[in-house]
Image (cartoon, rainbow, N blue to C red):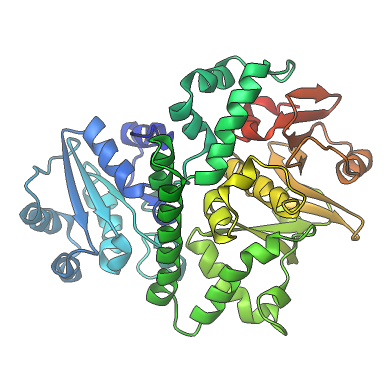
Length: 438
């Protein structure tokens, strides 16, 4: 089972660009960065020269001795059996965060050897870049990679339904019942496995829920081990405390982050470093509150009020101890967290499509819109419902107060446009950009 990752098209555009610089792929651990770099090289280059800086102290030492690309290329040829030729060889620098000098060398590849195609990535590279050591400012391109999206999942799970959603759907017509039913079933399977490629492949290959959960638990264990390996020693307990509090943060109807759920008596300034570390590692999204909708949306952030979500809905499910069976069952015990999973999976879709990252809106504690999305010159209020019950006054209050061109409501109901409110099935969040034209 091999996944088709949509990021491949961006890599091809990078290869063909006349303004191409060395490329850094950012993203959380175990989302498939190494695989996509190798697959890209295999499909679009004659040769692939792969270098892993975590696996070779010798290689790191070579970059300590020189910054000259011509000398480095001569040395790199000694570490590979592949020819290194301009334009025909893809040079892959993996786990580049292990060598600040290797990271810095990208500047010189850009300036002195632009004919060579270099792509780099690494576990927790975002943390290394945030520290600013030897960073090649202005001399690299960036590409953000995310976990497998539902659109990528259903492409492999049910190509016929994927193609219908991709090519036939319009915002003015409901989906056929067969599309609703089959897409909903695929979506439930996606909520179980989430977007970590190893878990996705296990799910699609029919290896069983136990295998999927084992993979996910191993990933969560690796993340926790990263805290002690890569984080400053003084920050490790606080990073772990914030991380472990995520399920309880999201289990409430009001999901605003509360420091007291991390530790009784905790103060904001004590945990800001921990929150930033988890953000830079790509493990969480921090969504700030705006009390006034305006452009640019970032200008109206209330930095004291925010919600945090996990990078992957499948990992959130496992981290919370939620059994897969609950996604097919009706139980009153699974209510608030059902909403949390729905919000998390919608947010995952929005961040892959829209920039800047969404915010949320709150009004003096009386109403709250789950997300507020900047889309061109428009601000789109978003409400997320985990089922078919659309009761709630917050979205209507926002619409009445601010008169947006378009509002979006996600639920398990069919596609429908109701005036300036677009009702989208939860599984169609990845197609929001296509359908949300005001």
